[in-house]
Image 1 (spheres, rainbow, N blue to C red):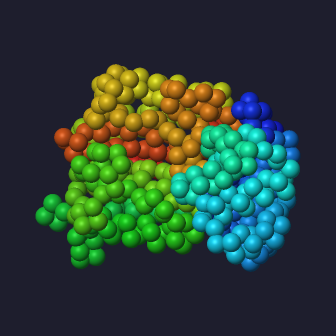
Image 2: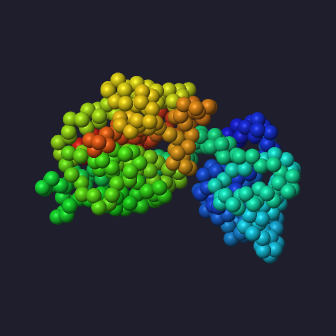
Image 3: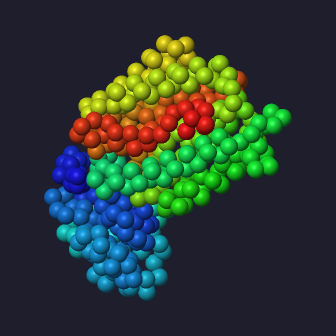
Length: 404
C-alpha cells in the first residue's frame, strides 16, 4: 500500500490551494514523516504542488545522502541559496520565509493560496508566513490535510506498528512476571527482599522497550489503586504496590511509529467490584473487536460500548455527560506518527471518523471509581485490513499476572 497523493490533490483543489507546504524541524515531524520515511534530517520542508510529485528541501549538504534516500525530488541547499541567506544574518523566521519562497519558485508554485502544515515553532512560522505574504502568497492551515493523508497506513507503517507492538507486549509481559513473582507481606508486595514499588516496574518497562529499539517520548502509565482510577494519572514511582488493588499498565512507545496497549492487573484476591468491572470491560472490548469493520463509524462503536457498559449499571458519557465515575472516555483513537491521530471516534467526525482498510487504531474501554480507588482499562492496537481487523497486541487479558 502506497500513499494516496491523488486524495491530497482533491483536498487541495477543494480548498482552492495550489500546493501543500510542510515546514519541519526534523524528519520526525508527524506531518513530514509520512513522505520521507525513516531518514534522519534536521530542518527541512516539503512542497507538494497540486498534480505534481512532492519535492524535499533541506538546509545542509551534510544531509544530502539522507535526503536522497527519500526518493523525492530534492531542493538542495545551493539551489535554495541557503548560504546567501545565512550571510545576510536573517532572523530564523525571515530565513525560513526566504528559503521557502525560493523553494516554491523552484517547484513551480506561483504566488497564490497554499496550505501550510508542520509542527515548527509558532513564532518562526508566523514570521515566515508574513514574508511569504509579502510575495503574494496566502497561507491557510494544512495540518488537517496531512492528518487525512496519513490516516491510511502504508505496508511499511503497519510493519513498523507491528514491531513497536511486539516490544510493547514484551514490556507488559515483563511487568506481569515481576508481579507474579512478588510475595505478600504485611499487606504489601515484596520482591527480592524489597517492597515492590511502581518505580521498579517502570525501570523494567524502560529496559525492555530499549532492547526493542523503542523510546517513550510521552512516558507511560503504571497506576495502582486510586491513581489508576483517574485515566491519565501516570503513577508515583515511590508507591508500594499492594495485593487486592488494581494496577493499570498503559504503554505507548514509539519506534518508526507509535504503538499503544493497556492491561490491568491485580495480585491476590480480586475485590468483587473490581472483578465485576473487569468482566464488563472485557465484554465491551470483545464486542468492539467484532464491530470494528470497514465502513463502521468510530462513534457508532463508542455508542455501542456505552450501551453495553451502561446496561451493566455504569455511568457513561452518553447517559451522564462529564461523569468521572464509570466509563469516562472514548472507545479509541487512531495511532501512527502521533499517538493520537485519525481515525476519529468523536461524534463530530466527518470522513475521518469512518473506519477503512489501512487504518491503525486502539480499542480501549475502561471503568473507573476514584472514590473506591480502582480502575480497569483494556486496550488493544488494531490494524484494519481488507479481511477485517487484526489485533497487533494479542496478549492475555487476565487480571491475575500468574495466568500470563
